Amino acid sequence: MTRAARFFRRWGHGERLRASRQRRVALSVALAITTVAGCLTRAGTTGAPQPRASQPGASLSAAAAPAPSPRPAGFTLAITGDLLIHEPIVDKARQWANGAGYDFRPAFAAVKPILSAADLAICHLETPLSLDDSDISYYPTFNVPHEIAPAAADAGFRSCTTASNHTIDKGLAGVQTTLNALDAAGIAHVGAARSAEEAATPKIYELGGVRVGHLDYTYGLNGQRLPASAPWIVKLIDPAQILADAKAVRAAGAQFVLVSMHWGEYQAAPTAQQRSIAQQLLASPDIDLVVGNHVHVVQPVERIGPKYVVYGDGNFLARHAPCCDTPQTRDGMIVQVTVEVQKGTPAVSRLGYTPTYVDPATVTILPVARTLWDPHLSPALRSDLEQSWQRTTATVDKLAAAAAGVVPTEQP
Image 1 (cartoon, rainbow, N blue to C red):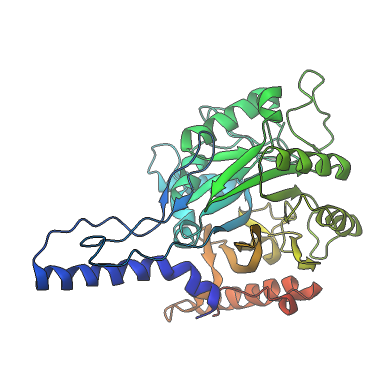
Image 2 (spheres, rainbow, N blue to C red; image 1 turned 30 degrees about the horizontal axis):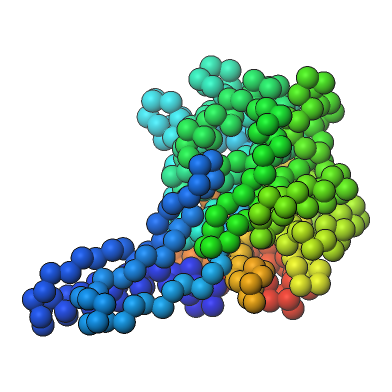
C-alpha cells in the first residue's frame, strides 16, 4: 500500500485500535468509560464546508492515561473534474429513482469512500441546475436536474466550483437556482454569485487549523457576455485580476490559497497559454496551488518551484455525445492533496491522484486501481480500465510529475 493510501485509511484503523483498547479496559477494571469518536467530524463556519477535526479518544482519567498526541496542523483535499450531466446520465438517474424523480447517488457509490476520507472534497459543477426539473435541457444550453446536488453531498463533496462556460446558460435566474440547490444540499460554492455582495465576499474554509482561501475562474461563456446588470455573476480568467483577488483573500485572513481554473478543452497537452498563466500565478506568494478543469481529458501535473499546477483533472461524471465520446473523455482523477504546516506556513507536502473511469455501460464512476482488484471483472471492462490507467498515468507524468513525487495513491 502506498504512503498516500495509508494516510487516507489511517482514521478507520485508529478507530479499530481504540475499540479494542476499550474492550480490554472494560474487562480488566470494569469501569464505565465514555467513548468519543476519534474519527474526523464535520464542523465549520456559516456558509463554509464543515471540516473534520480530531477528537480525543476514550480515557479513564487524566492521570490514568496520557492524552493522545494532537493531530499536526494541516488538512487534506480531494479535488475532482467535471460534473457534466449529459442526457444518458439523466436517463440512468431516472431509472435509479424508480419513477420518483432522479437519483444520481449510485453513480458515485464506488468513489464515495475516497471522497469522504478527505477533510474537504471539491467538485466542479459545470452546468446550471433546474428549479423543479420541468425545463431540463442539454448542450448547448444546459439545465440539469437539481438532484445532482444532494447526490454530490452524499458522495462526500462539501464544496463545488461553479465558474464555467455554461454558468449563465440560464441567466441570473439559473445561477440563483443552482446556488440555492447547493446551499440546500450543504455544499459550499465559489465561482458564480447571486449578488455583488456575494461576489465580493472571500471564500475561506477552516480546515485543520488553517484558513484556506479559494478562487475560481472561467475562460469564457460560450460567446455570451457578462450581463450589464450583473457583471459580478462570474469571473473570467485574467491573470492580473486573479493576482489581485489572491492578495485580497490573503488580506482577509487566508493562509493557503487554491485557485481553480476552467480552461482548455479536449487536448491532453496543456496549451502555451495555460502554462504561461500557471507560471504567473504560482510565482506569486499569495497563491499556493492551481487546479484546472473543463478539459474533458486528463492533462499533466507540473511542479513549478515548490508549488504544483494540475492542468486538467479530466471528467468526473460525464457521457458526451457520440461525436465527442472517446475513451479519453471517460478518464478522470481525484487529485489528493496533503497540506502541512511547517514553521507556521502551510504548504503542499504531497500531491497524489486516484485515476477514475466512467463506465459507459453503467454510467458509474470507477476508481481504476481498486476496481481492477476484482477477480470477477469482465474481460472487456478489465481491458478498458487497464487502458484508462495507462492513459492517465502516462499523461500526468508528461511534465516530470513522477519525478516530483506525484504518483497514484493506489496501484492495480
